Image (cartoon, rainbow, N blue to C red; front, side, top):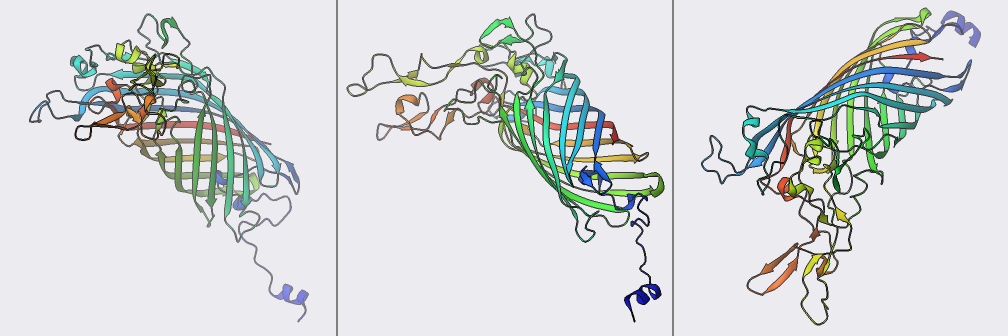
Length: 475
């Protein structure tokens, strides 16, 4: 039997997602929204451009506690250090406009541009079960108040960063039905706004300069970080569903013109970088309805995520409250380095390690060492493609943050192998052998009033709610 005759007797059945004419849309074979990559130089479609405009509103809340040895109900004595002393409720509301563009470069290769514009960012500390009636909870060792509750930060707005990235679909199920869709991407974020400065909206000088408290500064809006991100995502469509999973990684690098960048180069710093973020997400897109001829479809997305935040220095929930504090234990400068006392000759006398008067002084800016923790979240969204050139998305998300310390700097950096004359107070003496053991070098970021065990603050029961809507115009 000839090939032609066989084809006539046993015609090939067309798949539901297969076009039968060159002009028919291929909606049934489109990849998931999360793995969709615009392209160029593709058959009759030489160029693709997607323009995005979205609005996002988020609300974050948590309870701030402090370690304390104050007498508390249910404890046998006041000598017990508990981490349950109520300090404040933290709340934050952020409104953001998301502007973006996806530009096709070549087949399954796209340039990604993003510009989030913060319209409003407000933060407040309120009473937590009567905490404002116990002012001694917020005292330092000298009896001064670190800050008061209630506390209000100024309303901030502006641009934190813009990003440029590349997405590449190594495999595309639309082109190769036997393979899943696999997208990899890299991203660079560049801070452009005024760096954040700690502020108290109720103070006469709202944003005092740490080195000169009589000088007022701009509140700022940017974390002052240049960042590098990478991600990889897999998806595979089976009929009306498309499950997916992916990994994301983000590393921040402080700019030198920020308060962070000015204090992260000292050799005594135990942590001199922001937290690294690693995210794993898995979910499923469901496509219950499609209209092939009109380029229309409706997609729902259900996603679960886990985010690991490594230990690092960060703008925590108490950044404004602690950074604008006038308590002497926070306002006084720490020495940036230690050396032998003046006039001492180490070869002939036993020298004492004292603050080096020639070293840069380190002022407290509100940025604190934060312990590692995990966030767990879920999102649900719906996308309606109204036609060939436009689609709309709306969604909601809920994220829970694991309890973690937000002031936890170590007093000494043990990774020190230099001279004992630079060790300052970081040594231990043996009474039996009359010898001194160097245990490190003083950490200039350590403040005993907030970092010493028994004085540390924590953020507990953190919860973030996100709502967003966006429109995409596709050329």
